[in-house]
Length: 170
Image 1: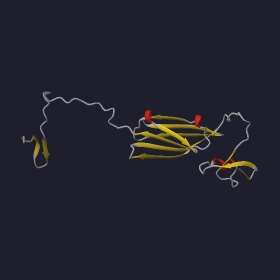
Image 2: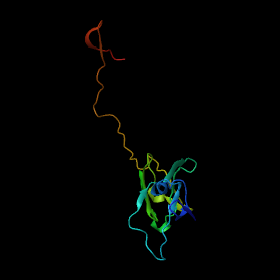
Image 3: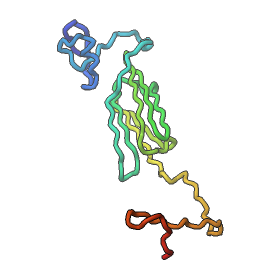
Image 4: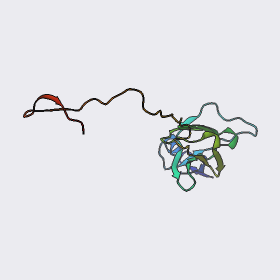
């Protein structure tokens, strides 16, 4: 811990915690958080500033999975709420006086029921397998002819050819 500008006790966190600089009026306290001293058993504050976490999303082609990583330092594991649908991921994670919030739209469908999440050292890593786009496809039976549909005759028109006339069959 160290003190800064206003003489308050502060703790260093990752660079994405820029809101602390704004809270201290930019007095050289970049990337730090004020930690209020609370008695043991005290609850977190009711109002929290919503913050978008640093997020990395990439496709792991070797394992056919989507990997999503959220930097959410200070969030207790039991308060992290992740919801995954076939086409989206939603995160809320309260931490001290902030709440990390993120909503991602996915361009390739995933299998939400097969998702795995691991939270370690402030990094939430989610791996979810991609869904085969043909997995829910329905096979359509193809019937052989006999419907009575005949192709229309091709028509030819041109300035030197005169009026429209049918082309001979080939």
